[in-house]
Structures are given as structure tokens and as C-alpha cells.
Image (cartoon, rainbow, N blue to C red):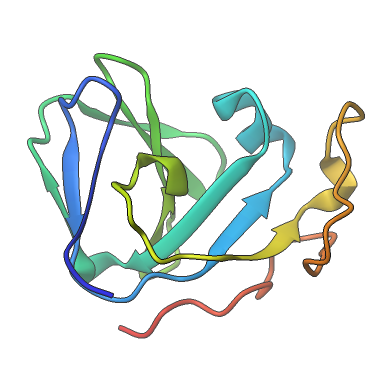
Length: 138
């Protein structure tokens, strides 16, 4: 999968992924729920495959000792999650232009999910996020 486009709500931050994307993972951790208002649906790519333009409105927030979250400083769209120790970046799946060709693969951090919804689909469910779904190749 190559040349997938994405952007924030206002269009101030646009990006292209020129490489493979990981299947979508649903993250139910408290930080993802607070940044998005619900659980997050995210794909991921190798850092070298992501090009972001323009970068004037892109802001990074250090949300933990291990990672940063990228968002648009103009409209507030939640765009990226980037761990410090990895070579990939997670991309909020809803920011990608259709068609993506992606499918959902798993739920992670289900032990932190909110009480107002259920995860009763057939996808694998993990208490943490470690190696739940393999990352795409470099």
C-alpha cells in the first residue's frame, strides 16, 4: 500500500504514507481515550515512509515518558502517536483519505476500557499493547 494521503480536520496538516501500513488497532488506554474522546483506531508506518506538510501547524505533546502525540495546533485533530524508542509512528486511522484498504486487527489495553461500551467483536483482545499486531516492514 503506497501513496495514502491524510490530513487534519482543517487541512493545515497534510501527510502522505509511501509504504506499508499496519492493520488498524483499537487502543482503549486512558490516554488515548482522553485525547480522542473515545477509544482510538490507529494504523502505523515506518518513520521514513511518512512525509508531513506543512509542519507549521503540527504540534507535539509529550504525553508520557515514552511517547509524544502529534496534533494540529489550529483545529486540534489528534493525528499521531510516536514512541521515543521505536522506528515507527502510529497514525489515527480516521485521518486517512478513503479508500484505505485497511482492516481492524486487535484491541489493546482492554483492561483500561471505559464502562459505557463493549468489545464483543471477534478481534483478539490484549491487556497491554506490547506486540499485539506486528509493525509494517521498513
